[in-house]
Amino acid sequence: MNIDKTKPVMVTGANGYVASWLVKYLLEEGLTVHAAVRNPNDEKKIGHLKEVATNSKGTIKFFKSDLLTPGSYKEAMEGCELVYHTASPFTLDVKDARKDLIEPALHGTENVLKSVNETSSVKRVVLTSSCAAIYTDAIDTVNAPGGQLTEDIWNTNATESYQPYSYSKTLAEKKAWEMANAQSNWDLVTINPSGVFGPPLNPHNTTSESMNILKILGNGQMKSGAPRMGIGMVDVRDVSKAHFQAGFKPEAKGRYITSAHNTNFLEMGQALLPKYGDQYPLPKKALPKWLLMAVGPMVNKLFSRKFIKKNVNVPWKADNSKIKRELGIEFMPMQQSLEESFQVLIDEGILKPKK
Image (cartoon, rainbow, N blue to C red; front, side, top):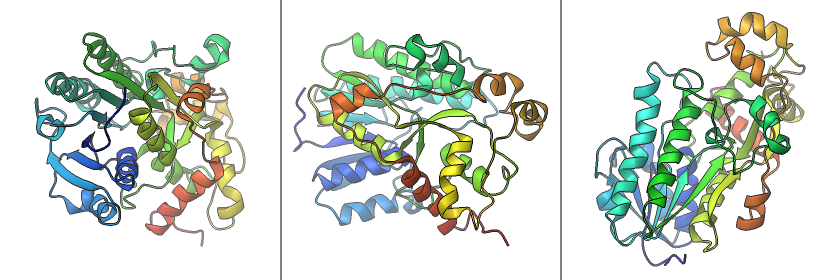
């Protein structure tokens, strides 16, 4: 599938954490980007993209669109051969899982792909999925064939009431494959990142879940210890490069686990110690699992006993050989990625040094 670089490329949720970096790379390549955003007049949310466009050889055009408004991506899609669908709600703290997560993820994907079906120019769709569509808890990686996640595995344990975010990503990606397989005008490639860290292109956007983890590690909430909670992590710039490659490499196909490091909360906190340990109350030791079982549910409703049992002191492992081999992705060192994210929280005044 060859994509013509003289044609515009559409990006949904173009001002998002991953999408912003992707837009930057597209503009630096001299492409025309059709940026679909909720509010094209909100300077606070799109100013950073305009600035990037001014300093690169590409062109950006903004279009108003919304995940839940049918047909609202149609105009932005006109004339595009390549569509990046990155827009999807990512929050773990929801009041109504169906309304806040599942419907926007599922109907949003359906809405975008319906317009793709009606736009004859589109040849390829790259969807931002997640490792959450592959697993629910770290224990699933241990129980996977060969003891690690691969692209062949689907998340079968998440539900609307347990890990609803993972459930929403699973339903949305499955819907995308179902719609892709029902036609032959365009092909689908999915990028499935683990926990995405690294500096946001818009420094004022520090609300991502990964930033929340770093806030907790750096603000003293875990100074008495951090759980060895198994997760995967990858830098936002590597995820965006993976999207770029998935769009333009003709041989790209199927799903791509986009995860650089198998790690845990304690190890991440310790990676920040050399540079920040003197000034910030970072965790130095492990929080025992039994203690977390006792106090976790009181501290944070997400830390249910079931969740702690399946994720704490459980190693997380994924096989990232496919993306290295097929898309040529080389991943950034964990320490660099974490330090550069942490620095943003300091620069924005969100983390304060110890007195």
